[in-house]
Image 1 (tube, rainbow over the protein chains, first blue to last red):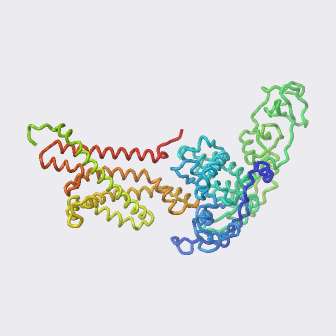
Image 2: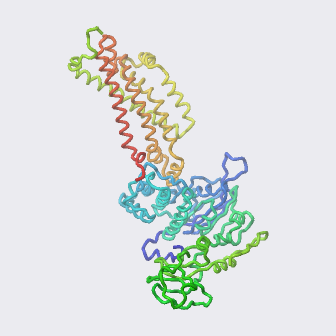
Image 3: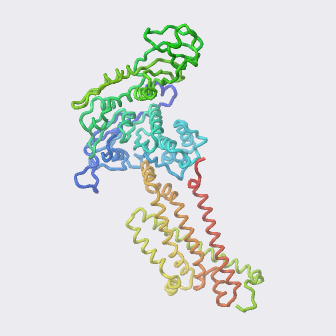
Length: 401
Length: 219
């Protein structure tokens, strides 16, 4: 997932695509005539998005994030300033030509209710005049990519899919012609939190394969931190307050507005940026099902972790009840401790530990085999090292043992 | 109508099948032409009115006024200009379809969800592609609903054009009234009703076939 070496993964399975394009805002201002004089939707926005990155525009409603996004594909024309894609001023490109080269995903999906899923995904290829067979192959490829069975959903209509499936199709439709730039306006805003979480993770996975440049609008700072390579925090009136990688935003907010917007729990939010794979794992005492229990690695250990024949953890055994020398049995193991994968964020891991009222989580690989453990103590260590304080902030007392 | 006559003399029906067929055909042509021309005019007016909203008020005003003119008066006014011809009949019949059709076309196009329009434009559809690939197909159920009302109304109204020497089945109705002969009257009126119902049913089928997305649900 996030930790994979992208280039080698792409070369290995042959899905390397054209790199994304750079997107640049140069002193872009937008005034709407209808608003009172002087009130700008976007005020002197300058922003540079490197190719292949996800740039998240985030801010409260009325901060001009959607307007900014829509200026890239000329659904909105700037009052002054320029938007450049790969160095070319979009105002010089015919609007329809420009838009066919830019993926576009919106919150309510905007799927065409009267066209099948295949026809929906094939919209831009159709507009571009692709031969039917090529479009069809691409549609099936995309459906598989987003985890839907082409044979099953190809000929269905949007109303026949669930909300989450519709959002996936919306994303697939935007990717159909492999556009170097994608615009996503709160693409996961209309689904329930669990589905949203999953769609976010899926999109990050897709993005690592496709590497198009993405401009992503959201009002949700957590989503911004999770999705963005860079995050642009905007404020009412269309002012850009800070443009930085998420970690910098959390550790070094430039002013009060950004600090308040990212929230006083930004130290915790930072945990969402770190994955277990980024930390050195600890090891613990182990025992195998059916084997004799060995003395613990550390004399102070009160528990030992029971593994099955496939190296998969079964649960913890209390050494007070199962002393070294006795035979390890499945029934003696307590499975209440969470098993987490290396790509899990520290935030999710911590949340699971708190949910289970335990201080240690077991880290497993993709096949569920034991790799190590992580303790609340080591997460707290990470927290302490990462949070820089603003003057006036309450000192976060980390009361975690 | 003499007291001894039965309500319907089937022997008359049997001996006049050719005649009946001819009038039915006339009726179909008169109605079909009126609906066809009316739909064409309404599509243009409706599409323009949804593109330029300021047009909608004058367009509905004109078609509303036409709709309120009594048909007899309209034909009487037209006879000095276009004579006792099919043109006179069609001008009248077409006039009465416009209000319903234009309103439904505009309502249909307006009912297209804004996000669908936004997505279509954002993916690079031209205005024309937006209209033909997205707006009109999505407006189809509403347009067809209007077409059904207009068709049923026109089938009935066509009988009135018998007064100016057209009229299809209306010829029988007029003939029946003038001769106090119930059989022809019933044949004319009855077939007109059946024709209206058949046309309506046909349009229901058309709607069903052309909007599979509107009635297929999950599963």
